[in-house]
Amino acid sequence: MLLDQIARDDAERGDAETMLIFLGDLIDRGPESAQVVERLRQLAETRPAQSTRFLLGNHEEVFLAALAGSVKALKFFNRIGGRETILSYGVPEALYRNADYEELLEELQAKVPAEHIRFLQGFEDLILAGDYVFVHAGIRPGTPLTHQRVSDLRWIREEFMGFTGAHEKIVVHGHTITDEVDVQAWRIGLDTGAFASGKLSGMGFEGNQRWLLQADSVTVS
Image 1: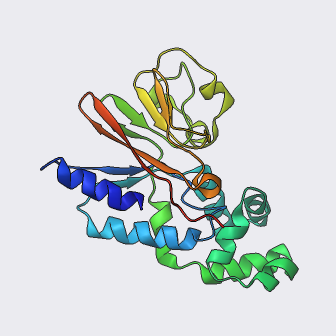
Image 2: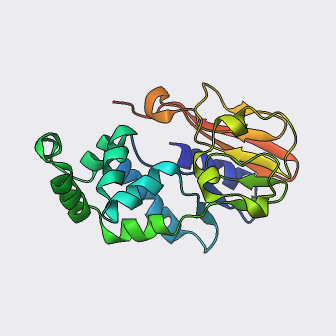
Image 3: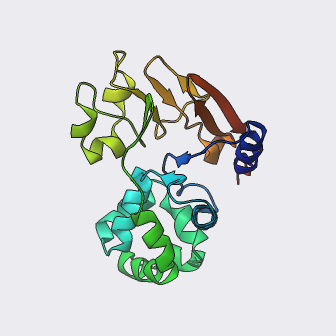
């Protein structure tokens, strides 16, 4: 498990104020999405304040919109991998297959614990740390970090991924899946598609050093 690797790595490096940053998209496509949310909610509760931080991914954004009562968001949620999340919260598969969207939304709202909603609602859009900026999807090239749109931070792809110039800081992001961790001069992509590849990736940062941490035995069904 990647969290175990991180804990061992942290212990081996001696005393330091360690901050864990999760880049978002904790849910969807993976069959244990609800369990992932609960595991990380509990992790945050056991660690010092502000030492565990979470970025809101586009998948969490749509999930929260659906839970707030949007049938339109629920329909879109299903198209981007929400089925597995819905079932992971205990919605019966027969109901998922046969219910209309209004009925499915009512059932999902009844199944998702209030503490999960509060936890997800507390996620951030952008985190600055030293020479790095952590975001879910990317940033709008040429726009100051202080003026980035939330929609870009959660959804941008081609305009950011195709840009080869410099940014204010090195951007660490997820959202766009690559076969291996994607290290470029001004950005680092850490999404290696664990739901399909079984490869969950992270990276440690300290001063001018950085190192890869990776679990390649994630269960994929």
